[in-house]
Amino acid sequence: MLQDIRDNAQSTIAKVIVGLLIVSLSIWGMDAIIGGFSGEPEVATVNGTDITEREFLRTVQLETQQRLMQMENPDPSLIDEDQLRTDVLEALIQEAVLTQDAQKQGLELSDADIDALITQMPQFQVDGKYSPERFAATVRNLGMGVAEFRASMQKSYVTNQIRAAIAQTALAAPESAAQLLSIQNQTRDFRVLSLSQDEVVDQVSVTDEDIAAYYDENKAQFQEPENVDAVYLTLSQATLAEAVEVSEDELRAEYDSRAEQFAREERKAAHILIEAGAEADETLSTIQSRLDAGESFSELAKEFSADTVSGRDGGDLGYAGRGVYDEAFEEALFALEEGEISEPVETSFGIHLIRLDDVRRSDVPAFEELEGQLRNELARAKAEERYVEVRADLADAAYAADDLAGPANELGLELREVQGVTRDGGVAPFDHAGLVRQLFSADVLEDGYNTELIDVGDNVSIVARVKTHHEARQLELADVRDDIKATLEVMATREALQAKANNLVAEIEAGESVEDGSWKQYEAQGRGAAGDLSQLVLRKAFTMPRPGGEQPSVDAVVGLAEAHIIVLDAVNEGDVDRENPEFQQVQQFLTQLEGQREYAVYQQYLRETAEVERN
Image 1 (cartoon, rainbow, N blue to C red):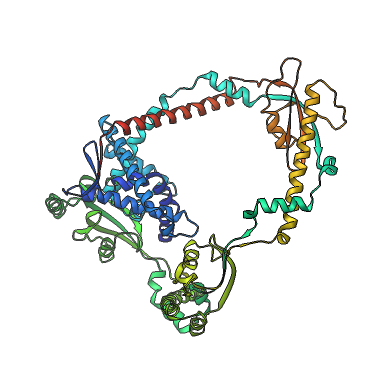
Image 2: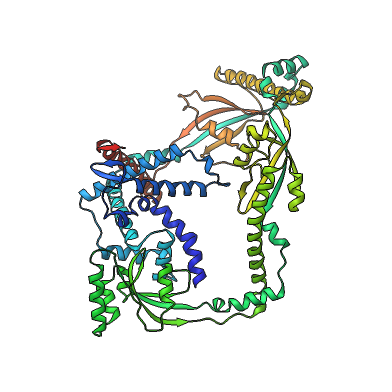
């Protein structure tokens, strides 16, 4: 159960929540912390409301993390910090404008409404039922308190209510849907005559003079870019782990020391959460007096707890093991005897009174069942310690050495070589922008130093040095002659096909008959591909103008090795059945587009009419 909570809280659930609420959380998440202070430095003021520097910096940090997560090889140096800060500030201003508008319209959610939303969200459910421990773990994983999370939900929800209201009032005329469906369902009658490159091969000739002229006119295309050959050392924690030996005694000792952990003790807790503040002591005193008088902890949780979701269940948080709750909360919980109530415990969420309701433990698995897992964990732990040590030694040795052979011998690492790394990179690990940038820095490229130790992956570090520097050079004509000839032949073939196709189009338009058995007829052809009909021809046929009276529409389309003459005889209007679900779907789609457009205009109006001061 504990592992399930950890996995879900740190993966799918966290991503979903972040995806839905990231802007709202970053803007409003600090309210509970900074709300009571004055004189907070601000970065902008929107209609008299400050956007504080703390809000701004927190959002910048979150956005930076988001962008790094989207990179295949995370590298902070690739982020344009000035543009990021500009984007974040504008997003904060826009969010403030929208939130203020919602407040003016009197839109709000009650505590009961928020409770209902939280309990219905699948992200906080286990087996289809709301789980307080999953909720607590998820919110904590987001770095928020309960009050902060609830505030962010309220503001984000009321803002979305306005968005939904505007979208729902949008209208799309049925005729627009009918017109779109008519075009979509349109069919065309046309004939196609195809020409292959074999029909013009006798017209294609490329001479040595042509090749030389093309080379002289396009010399920039035939340059080998500046590149380097490099030697490098790779330090990997995974490789170190493979070489680590773990003895039987170490495995037994680890198993014995963690036996209780493997038993996975879980404790069922209930709590009463009091928000920190001037009235907290008085509230706690009242609760304690009523507990001493024999009143029910559960009833007092319903009456006083700021965590109204668990409060409705008498403060019940369900079962959880270690690593789920705040450290202070966990320490207090695991020090209690069954049925005992703790002293007030202060965490980032507020002040808690905790009651231990039950303790359950699973059986300890046999040593043989865990031997492989323990061996891997001990090896990784030893390798992690060794990696940190060797990484520091390698960084120092590479910095001081005139080459990499010495550090390689000293630390038992393999000296490897790579060729042809350009400023755009090379094969892995030289596809890492930071490493390539170091390799082409003046210190390394010109002065002959080693690069710094660069972390190119998860516990993988590289240090490199330039072995040979190759300046950009002009390739000789002899080196590229065959490539140029092939290019010119393709160009000449296409030109010949185009010329022949143009002549045939002119003949047909002049009323001349082009008798050829290779004409293919397509009747009532829709926009979907059909058998031997290429997309090149199909796209052209549906962009040609309608035939005028008795005169067909004629055109040609030319590829690299073929040409097609198209004679369009008729355009057949598409059928539109207004009772068909397809018609309703198209109209709904157009309505949604119109709603999005109207909301975008509304947002722009609010933004343009807002009084914004940037500091």
